[in-house]
Length: 141
Image (cartoon, one colour):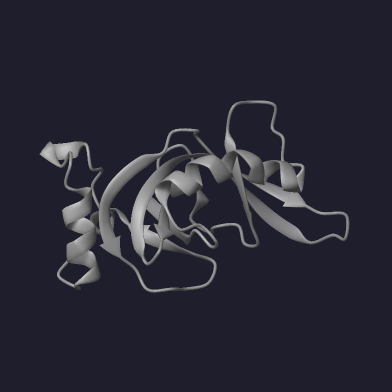
């Protein structure tokens, strides 16, 4: 299994992502007739079989991995001009993670299982978000 990591461009907080993600799929007409969130990207992952129904997309917000969203499946999409895309169809669940610094990059990247930050609610991490964010800004984690 391998996860994905993606910059959350134009979003400055976890709360902003929560409010924004419900609207975005409608911009593309990506309605799959179910309660899911959709992100359209240009490239289909070559390792899709390791991702679908098993992995998460980790969102980078303001320079840190801040949360993750389970990936249900990957759906090919071709627009009216014949360009191929990949719709990342995700659960509506969004989980805060221990903030982990991540430099800017384009597109998405694979995130090995061992490099994925844990959820804040896991292993007694509740309430550690502010401290972790401060440590990440200082380059200590």
